[in-house]
Each structure stands twice: as structure tokens, then as C-alpha cells.
Image (tube, rainbow, N blue to C red):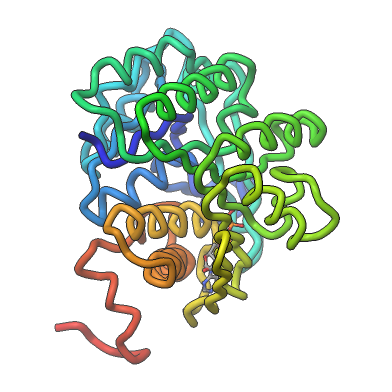
Length: 315
Ligand code: ATP
């Protein structure tokens, strides 16, 4: 039985060493919110199935090869006639990254209900957790229906559903985002959002009332990410805030996905609320402290490394 099934678009990514318009060199890798979470989880030893589509091109091969190398199950990644999407990252100044997407009509955006149905049929037993994000339904009607189908199948099979709101304002209008994300959040067991994204997932006048709306509607855990200020988890009978871990931030992109991987890992391991929030905060700090969306994700053995004093050489 897979621990986690997730779905979405994985793109090839280019990380420019300088400004894109000036030319020069770029490093090639892969990126995508759900894929970042998938890799974060496999690094920690969990079994993950990824459902998606890539093009019949070398960038698609790069995506497959990278996910396979990281131990993510890729049997449910279909080859589509459209091209693999591309995302370009340009660190404009320290702490500020410009992101350009080239994903319109891409293979990943042609994810469909049948991709999801086939993936659920192919696995020997349902996943323990379905992880979805707000990025995939924003890609178009087909991916939105695919996400809704995944939620239906997961719930029918008794799997828990985790939604990371992950709002991408360039992909859809705020009105549509609010409508879809509110509906998806109401179906989820765990809702994770940045503090500024929570209004898209639940009605209410302030954070407390939005959290109450979600919990009253059947969500078991609401997790609010607060960047360098840490994160808070709310359940029906507990509220717990932990500060971020002190690290020198070199690349904040991917912190949210790394955080989600840590949180779900803690949940899969049966850790109590404080244990899973602490693991999420730790994996978030690893992402911020290293370069790349997922490259710096810790293995299980590395989780305790941040407990060592600054300047330690691990020999
Ligand atoms: P992104 O969209 O860039 O991936 P996000 O907005 O989804 O990020 P953040 O709240 O920025 O998520 O970060 C997630 C978690 O990562 C935070 O809750 C915190 O634990 C950790 N984190 C973020 N920034 C820092 C930082 N500067 N130092 C240490 N930890 C951080």
C-alpha cells in the first residue's frame, strides 16, 4: 500500500545563474509543488505514487529519471503528445526570485480523470493519504476534475485527504480559486495554508473564524505556515505554535512543500501533534537553508542535523 498518492504537473526547471535576459548559464532540474512533496517524503523513507503526464521529449525523460532516482513511484506518469512544461527561476536579488512559467497547454496540464482512475486501479491497496494542492485545479478544467476524482476515490477508500492551498494567482482568478479551494478544503482532513492564503479556503472575518469554519466542517487539522515566524496547527481541542528554526535563508522557494512533506511524514509515523509540526518546521528549514526546490530535502538520518551547533563539521 503506498503511503501517499499525489497528482499534478512536474515541469523541467531552469535556474539561471544571473539575469535571464543577459544570457549565461542555467542549471536544469525539475519542479512542481506535488513533486517536491513527493521527493520530500521519499527522502524520509515513505512510499509515494505520483500521477501525472509528461511530453514525449527529453524534458519528460528528465522528469521521469529524477523522480525515479528519488524513489518516487512513476508508473502512473503518462506520456502525452503535448510538450513538458518549463519553469524558469531567476534569483534577482538575494531573497527575491522571479519565476516564469511556460506551461500553457503542456502535457502536465492535460491530466485527466482517467489518469487518476487508472492510477487508483493499478495500486494494490489505497494510499493512506492523498495529497493535493491548489496548483493542479488552477491548470484547467481537466486537472480540476482529476483532483476532484482523486478526492472522491480516496475518501471512498478511507484515505485521508491533505490539501495545501498553494494559491497561484497567475493561473486563475481569485473568485474561481476561492470557490474551488473552499470546496476542496471542505472535503479535506488536513488543510495547510500560508497565513495570507487561508481566506481562499474558508469563509470568516479573521484567521480564528476561518479556522473555526474549517474545523466545524469536518477538517481535523488546519496548519498555518508563517514563513520565518514558524507555523501553527489547530485541531478541535488544541492550538500549537512553533517558531521557525534559525537557519541562514539562501533560497526560500520550496519551503512550503518541504514543510508539507515533513508534516505528512510525522502523521504517517504516528507522531503526536507537536512532533509532526516540529518535523515540518525542520524540513521547511532545510529547504530554506539550501538551494533548489527539493534538492536540500533531508533524509531521515539528517533530520537531527539542525540540532547541531552552527559551524559543526559532521565527520
Ligand atoms: P513557498 O511558497 O515559498 O514554498 P510558503 O509560503 O508555502 O512557501 P512559508 O510559510 O514561507 O511557506 O514556509 C514554510 C515553512 O518553512 C515555515 O512555516 C517555516 O517553518 C519554514 N521557513 C520559512 N522561511 C523560513 C526562514 N527564513 N527560516 C527558517 N524557516 C523558515
